[in-house]
Image (cartoon, rainbow, N blue to C red; front, side):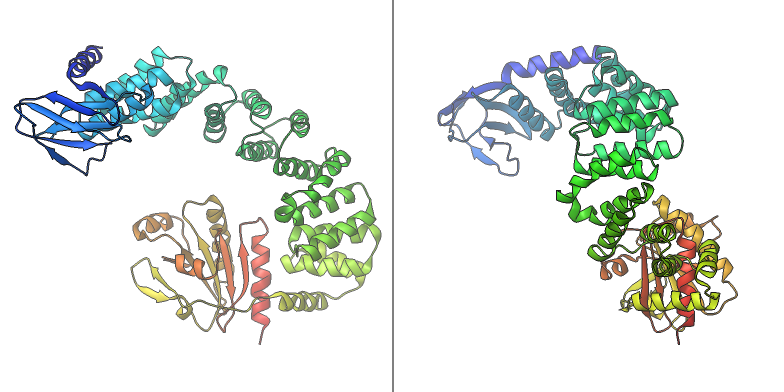
Length: 539
């Protein structure tokens, strides 16, 4: 408190000789016992000019129409400062902060930062104030946090910033306690939305508190651009059985609000996956065919229309949407093949059963259930099924040359990627140490390597875009990877126009990239093994 009053005294003493005004286009005149002064206009501190007195101690300078501030200094210190008369108060304060920051007048800067916050009481001004204290008065930062918390106990901007600072201090317990104090004062503002997001994505809430906060978010924030992340989070919580089944009604109520097409699609797909209110959900999906979203999500809109109609046993419509998903959007993944396969069983269509059965097995030919159905229903031998799967893969495989780019092993040795294990089939995993999905896929990659460790046809290689070899060594250490890891793989990703991770490349003995799998799925093991066996079969 003593320091705070000292700042006021310092400010008043400075204020008495420094706060002058001018009218743009007029002359500034003042007396100063100096032979010369430097002057700076409009905060352009890189541009100094010399001003000498017209006569003894009298300085005069003509201002321009666009001038806002003129600073006169001597020996690196401000002597007089003149501000344009018609400046708004907030603008004036901001200019003073820039001026005194330039002259390293820390206490004065702190005073003005405090003044701005006292006027605005918003997150930006408080964050600017606290960041400055953190940087320049680090030993006192917690005292200041407590001071502002006690002065503004219901200001969500103060509570949010204080929480973030304690989070930086690794005191997550304190940070969470502060955030919880903000909950009763939340409104529809962006800061309230950010607070809700911080609580949901960072901390653990009890079930009832979690549901209450999500209901609040559903009611207040459904128009926010980032609201889909809240919906994704709620869906994940439901699927992990953290939210009760009763919470489905809140998703349904959300559909009755003026929400974006993206959120309509998210909730509709979630409902169909959970066989909930399917008929009404299909009605909500139908208008999306006329929306801009259809250009980006048309494949999945058709998929869910097919899946929903299959649940309702509307078989003609299932077939229609299946064909649109595959032919119009070239959707070729396990999910759409599964719908086609289940549809074929329902309507006893042997031709479609064979078609979708082979497509399903192209994703994982070790799926015993699918194999057994094809053997039983179509009287096919397993060797014939295998041949058809390989024929399907051969038609759809890529033929890309492996780029001539270099990677570095963890000892610092540089290799051309194409020169690593030239004669064998390569299975290359591209990963990042920070990605949880990459970590999952690396575990599968390790299982593959272990399973095929005695097979001389295959080599397993992992490449990361990161260049910090020490960090990568720490990441690898203790994980018992049985394959070699390389770093500096950004050029490889760029040359193949790949942006997402993880990625698996399957490369044949001639060096051609035959398959590219982007993203982690639970079925990745069967997917890769199927293609490994196919590439082994090629002559």
